[in-house]
Amino acid sequence: MITPEEDVEAHALRERGWSITAIANHLGRDRKTIRAYLSGERAPGARKPAPDPLAEFVGYVRARFADDPHIPATTLYDELAGLGFDRSYQSFTRMVRAGGLRPVCPRCVTVSGRATIDIAHEPGAETQFDWVELPEAPWLAEGRKAHLLVGVLAYSSKTRAVFAGAEDQARLIGALDAVVRRLGGVSDCWRFDRMATVVAPGTDRVLASFAQVAKHYAAEVVVCPAYRPNRKGAVEKGCDLIAQRWWRNADVATAVEAQTSLDRFLACTGDARVRRVDGAATTVGALAACERLRPPPPVPFPAEVTAEVVVARDATVAFEGNRYGVAPSLIGASVAVRHRLGEPVVRIVTQAGLIAAEHERAVAGAGRTVRTPAQRQALEEAVITAAAKAGGRGCRRKTHRPPGDDAKAAAARLRALAGDGDEGEGVVVDLAVYARAVAAADPYGGTAGGPVGSPRAGDAR
Image (tube, rainbow, N blue to C red; front, side, top):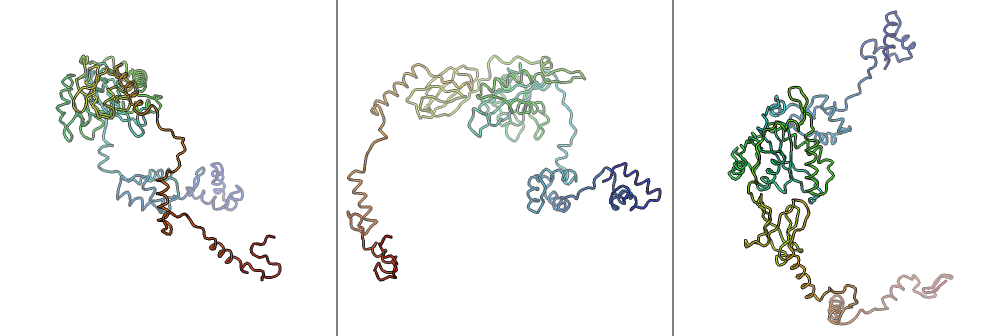
């Protein structure tokens, strides 16, 4: 490669009648290089392009894209690697993009390439709800995800969210009530996607059980059309805000810590997000102050949350991150824990339908153990009684107990079955067998008739 200055000089000398050899000797370059620049085959400052390592594989790549235009690049790269392609995956994807090898799917282009616009919402007109599942929650078992109901006011983008133990209808109602109160009130309508707890599967009809909930809050229910996530773009962005800006680095260990941290994040960072209205800069919090919301009902909709659990050895049952006490006689039994939204108590019901215990409900995820003094005393008495029946202590582990007469007799019978059939006889050692083995190992038979100086069997030198 020559510099632009050398290129200018080479062209000038050529116009004066210099030969290519003379110009090459003058500039200290190769004659073929000078000829390429003078003919326009190469340009100054540009290196000669390297050969395309994907060129010989382009036919296969095009054929595979014709078979399946959505084939993952990782899958196609694995196939090419088996055919001899030796470049990295990153180089492969760059070559595919530069060559425009992946075809455009005519069905997908109508979805991803269609025109978009921000849908205008009046203040207080709509609240959008959606579930988001957060992985690696420290207070849950490995592999389980935390369920979070997210609600967003469509006009201001004000976002609030509440953790729930599951996504069944009762817990949805409880989380929805908590989100509505955190948002500051009820909007004219609620927008959902096709949640099975809100909409009858395969239809746009709201479930009769959830219709009663909407009546309780005097909110209209709007269902998003199928495969139209941009119709609820506000809550989609709210879920992304929580997952990417809060959950990714949230330093929390319990559900209570997580809820407190999330409430603080949304009230501070979330409400401080910048928005522009008619060219003027404002914030989510300022727009939220203009929302026209109705006060929520004094009490939540009276849905009942039920969980089937087994009573633990300490006479407690687990429910919503806390433990509640029962009588010791129920240890190991299956019971139902019930809590009606709006009531301050938790009821524990047996399989026969009898109320075994009632406790004041603790804050969900607080990790508390709630039991009455009578239950504690009954458990202590049960533990003391069980210890007395067992003699006060368990068996010793470090003792000397050799096999008894019965064990020895059984062992003798086993050895007899494995031996020559003489029951009760021990192992007999035949020394003649060892003598024959020694004689076979001594080439001279253990006698003095061997060569002079050769040691006899058994001699020590």
